[in-house]
Structure formats: C-alpha cells, structure tokens
Length: 515
Figure 1 (cartoon, rainbow, N blue to C red):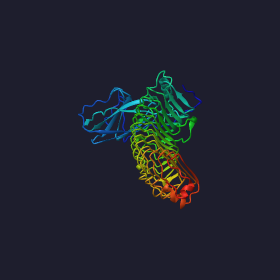
Figure 2: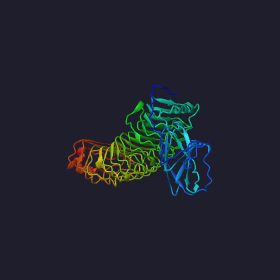
Figure 3: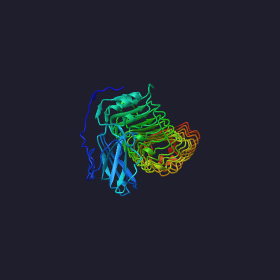
Figure 4: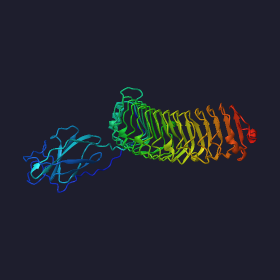
C-alpha cells in the first residue's frame, strides 16, 4: 500500500515538430502530383513501382513522455523515407504514417508511459524499399515527484503506482513481498522512475526474477536488495550512476550505500558497473555469485566494504580500480577465494583490513601497493603459508596474525612499525625467520604458537614500545634472539613471559640466561 503526503504534479511544455527538409503534404482528396502523402488513408500507401534495394540502420536517440527522436543511416539512394507507427503489436498498414526527406524524424503526440512500435522504409525514384522489422519504444512518465515514502507489497500495488506515472519519489521506495499475497513478479510498471531521493529497498520477493522496469533509474540515496531468493539478474540497474548517501538510514547497519544479501540465485553484479563512488558497500551470502566484475567502476568506498560468505568468488577481480576504503575492508568466509588479485590499485584502508576464514586463500601479493592501513588482521585462513605482499611499515596501529599454515615470515617487508604485533595460533610457525630487517616495533604479543621453538628473525630488534608478552608457546625454549633488544636496545618496559617451555625473566635475559 502507499499513502500520499503531498502530490506534486509538474508538466513540461513540449514543442512538437518533425525534422523535415522541404516536407510537402497534401490533404485527403487532393492530388497535386508533387506532394508527399501524410496519413492519407487507413492503409500504408500502395505503389506500382518495383522495390529498390538498401539497408536502414536505425537508432532511437531519445524517448520523452510525448515524443521520440529517431535517426538512421543507409547504403541506398533513397530520396524519401516513410514511417508507420502505432501501439505495440499493431498491424502494419493500420498505423499512422508520414514521410520525410532527411534521415531523422520525431514522432510526436504520443501518450505518456505507453508502448509503441514503428517501421521505416525508403522510397527512391524507381521503386519502394522494404519495411524494416518493428522497433519498440516506451514513452516515459512525467508527472513529477511523489512526495513521501512508498511501500508496495503486491503486484497490484506496483501496477497501480506505475499508472500514476511519477518520474521520482521524494522519500523511500520499499518493494516488499514478505506477506506473499499477490506476489510481485514484475517491476515494469515502474519504468518511468528516474530518481529515488531516499532508499530503494527490494526485499522478500521470491517470485521476482529480474528488475526489468528500473532501467531509467539514475540516482538513489541507497540501494538494499535482501532475500530475493530467485533473483537472477540486476542488469536493469545499469542506468544507475549515483549512490548519494554515506549515512545510516533507519538505523540499519548495512543499508547506506549498496547492500546486496541473501539473493541466492544471483550470479553477477552486472548493473552496478557505472557506480564510481559509494558510501558503504556490502555483498553478503549470495552463494551463487561468481565474480565482482559488476563493480569494475568503483574507485572509492568512503565508509566500509564488506564481502561475506559469497562462496563461489575466487578473486577480487572487478575491484581493479579501487584505490580507497575510508573505514573497514572485510573479506570474510569466501571459501573459494585463492588470491586477492584485483586489489593491486588499493592504496589506503582507513581503519581495518580484515581477512577472516578464507579457507582457500594462498596469496596476499595483491596488497603490495597498500600505502596506509590502521589495522591489518589476518585470521584463520587455513591455506595461507606466506605473507609476501605485506609491508609492516604501512601498518599504523595493529598487525594481528593467526594462520595455522604459516611457517615463516618470508616475503614480508619492514624496517620499523609503530603497530602492535600480535602473532598467535600459528601452528606451523617455528621461528620469526623473514623479519630480520625489523628494527623498531610497537608492543609485541606472541601467544599459542605450538611449534615455535625460538625467536630467530627478531635479532635486529632494538626498540619495542613498552610491552612484550610471550605466553603459551609450549615448546619455546630459546629467547636469545631478543638479547640485543634487552642489552643493547635497553628494553625496560613490561616483560610478561609465562607458560612456555622456558620462561626467563627480564633480569635473567640481562644476565644472559636466555635458553
């Protein structure tokens, strides 16, 4: 159902004309011998001339509410062109006809929000060309903006609102099939919409397979597609070029910007390719989504980007232009993801870069161009055994690592980092080999690494910010690689070492009792 807070109708004056050159006409019953007939009778004009040959390549340049502009090109020597048009599926010979000398025409006096077909053929001095196949147009709505939010719960309500022929909604549009009565199967009645100043919510519509009817939509404040379980395509959103909001409407965590979730039949994000910047981007639980190519236009996500449980995605290809994420980038539970290829242009992540539970992920090389991230958290990516591509120098606050397959730190680059280093639950890690160039670090936590036997790789450390905790590494028995940190660097911060095979105190370290 929908309610009207205020109806605001606006009309534009439309100048009606035909693009003609030396257009001649004669009225019914007149015979000048030189004129061009326009709508002379009920049927298309008859000719006794033999057909002339040639092709017409037709373009529909512009469709308005009452008119359509058509142009064409030809390889023939036609001198006149004849057009016939009528309501969709009309019988050729029973429509309205007119003739022009130029390769363009405007069909006028059309009804708003109506489907039409038209045909064109060429005439020449010694014959008549064949009619083209029919071309179809739908005139747009032009009744101004509906003032207020609209909620449509049945197909009948969708159709009824479409008949009002609004070009925009100054509020939210919620298309919600939760109650299941008269299920929504088509949005074609909404073909006149070009803008929704609030959010476009399409939710719980199990009978909706496509979004046909939304091709004219250019701008929304935010887009939310949720639990449309049989939706297979969103290509009809290809006209969408602007997502205006970075806020959090209605208090919903992942609505602002673009949120697509639990659309189980969706295989592609084609339809979003013309979006360059978005506030928040959330793609969740679309289990048949095959790739991110539909996001290939996105350069900036000013809030957060979340990719969660899209189990067929194998890489980040499609995000190749992405340079900036203002807050969190979370890549989580993408079980087929093997690499981050596609993120090579990424330079900045404002707060956190989270890589969680991506069971097939083996490479982080695509992050090698990252220049700034506040926190990098890599947790439970069971196949990841290399950190090549990670530069600790660019991590401002926290580097948190839990990886059961990681055997060393080979490939990682750093000389100094202010980041807190938290290394835990790395079951295959035997040493810190690969971190030899690291001289300065923030606080260090080394916990629950059951194969760790020594701290080789940390020999170069000379400064650690105030805190070292090394606990629950059950076979760790050699701390001598931290001797220079203690004795040359003069570490005097908090030293918390316990539940390892060997647990030297700071004083014992200073006295050389390190293994």
